[in-house]
Image (cartoon, rainbow, N blue to C red; front, side):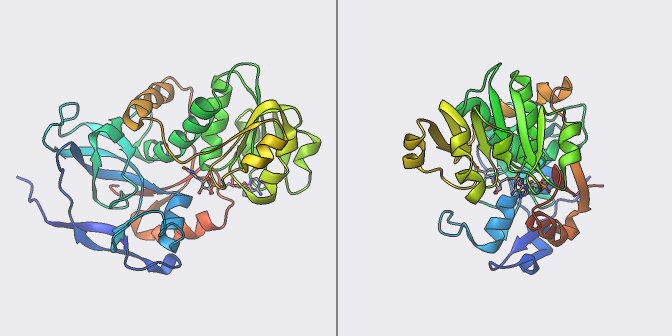
Length: 317
Ligand SMILES: NC(=O)c1ccc[n+]([C@@H]2O[C@H](COP(=O)([O-])OP(=O)(O)OC[C@H]3O[C@@H](n4cnc5c(N)ncnc54)[C@H](OP(=O)(O)O)[C@@H]3O)[C@@H](O)[C@H]2O)c1
């Protein structure tokens, strides 16, 4: 018989600040409430979102209670299910997105709404499954829901070698779009992803190559977003995940704009993603795997802004 402990290890913050406010420590073990699933975490990740929460940049938007366990991505095994959950059972292999307003998945256990989980792809391990939810839901919302990208269109993806970008490239190509991308240190990775044009933004002005595009996916913001408006065809769309695009600029250029603030239905979309991964149509890239205890290093790498694909944290070896 397995002993059920009331505590577990988790990465928590007790205050906002640099990566030194992250502590790998004992924390109360969550339980599965009604409609929830308690997952034994095997792998999780760090996203720029976790860095922003840790630094306190989002404290005006989310009503987080400290201490807070970080981490939105999870892949693991169902430990127990709460009242009313009929689609998962203990022992199932699942992946999903932990709620962004509550304790997250950088921990031994996380409680997640059953509707935010799906069966884990069988063709990849927990590390690679955990790399998918946050970034794939974002790219899906941007390209499939907001842009409704279709065959024959051209999309310009800024920061295509990062977490969201490398999945966005694959989703765009799946719909038959032509894909133009920007990167610098990770330019060779874009060529591996079989993009149509890869532009080194550190040595070339991207507007010299990318003109007349249907969709801009802006994962960078600032000057990169501003310089992208004139590249769109009339009626095209600029979508950003980082900085709300100006409605005035969109009107002035005769195009549309969208800021990604929500996700498509999580469990249902991840079930579709599972099928795409298991048929080899989406391949998650994890460039660095660290033990959960080394979460500070993962945050520092993300803050360096030049990571390739995803940084994953292994919880169960
Ligand atoms: N709104 C939402 O719901 C939502 C959801 C997810 C993410 N986000 C945001 O979206 C952004 C991207 O997320 P992510 O997870 O993909 O980030 P990420 O993985 O940290 O992005 C790293 C990549 O950015 C590239 N990069 C850095 N500066 C660049 C520039 N000036 N031009 C082009 N590429 C550049 C780097 O390529 P090189 O090393 O080759 O330069 C690197 O591969 C973040 O700001 C994140 O907070 C928002």
